[in-house]
Image 1 (spheres, rainbow, N blue to C red):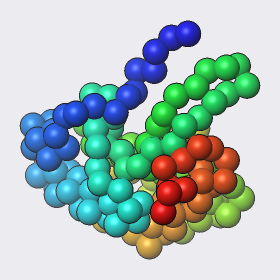
Image 2 (tube, one colour):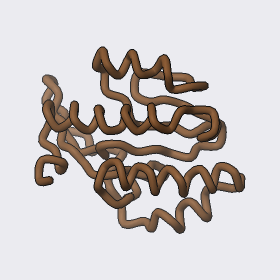
Image 3 (cartoon, helix red, strand yellow):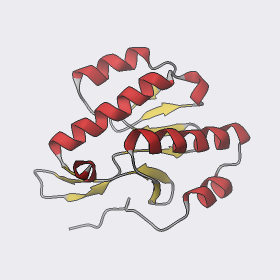
Length: 145
């Protein structure tokens, strides 16, 4: 079976942000997201792969037999936009998107340009409900709390 490309690493999160993010607004937003997601998840930030900052982790296993670990929530400060890994496919979360603000979405993540474009309270609810969803459906570090 193929090894997962996105695995937790020992790279320092602060060093990553300072060296990877070259836009001052994006850097400030990155540090703010680290504060918020640490608070909401109850876990410190950790690097996953070369560019994802994740909080906590859970174990998934697909019907195909593919399995691995992933962060409960996280983000990546990519050049074009932030990729937010905070969405679980529940009806409540789909409704929350109406109040999030300016964003784009794909199957796996939400894309935003900057924090001021979105409603932080709605983002918090999305993060917390996603953690609850993962807690119910996967082996999860959040169960030890």
